Length: 187
Image: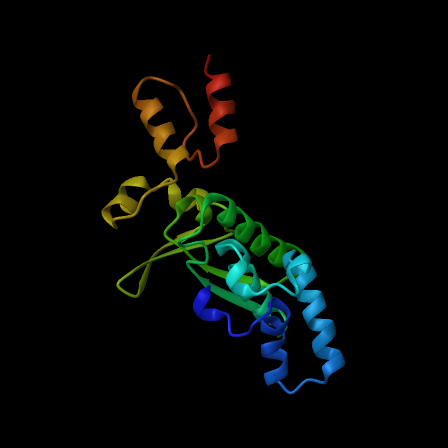
C-alpha cells in the first residue's frame, strides 16, 4: 500500500482521484466522506498515512479508488504482507463493498482461505484458465490443485487427513464450522 498512497493525509489521498477527474470541490468532499464511511476509516481522515498500519493503508488505497465510483475493483494480493488483523479488515471491507455497494470484485490471491469466500474461482497457469467453478467445485479437486502447485484451504487439508484416519466426513469441507459439524455427527 505504501506505493499507492500519494498525499500527506488520508483525506487528501482519497481526494486525489476525484480531483484528477476534474470534479467540483463539493462533489469531491461528498465522495471523500462517502468513501471514508464505506471502508470504515472515517476516524483517520486527518492522519498522515505513514502513521497507519498496513491494513489501514490498504483501506486508504481502496477508499481512494472507491471515491472514483468504479463498478469493478481488481485487487492483486491486497492482503500480502499484512498481519492477520489487517487481512481480516481488508477482506471484510472488500466483502462489504461487493455486498452493499454492488461493486464487482476481481480478487487475485495465493491465500486459499481467502479464495474460499469467493462466489466463483478461476485458476490460472501460465496465463491460461485451467479450472473454474464455485469454491466447493474447485477445492474438491485436490489432486489437480496440487499438480498445479497450489494448496487447498488448511481446514480442507485437515479434513482429508482425518478421513484417512477413519473419520467419516463429507467431501469438500471448506470452513471450520463444516469440519466441526462433520466431526460431531460422525460420533
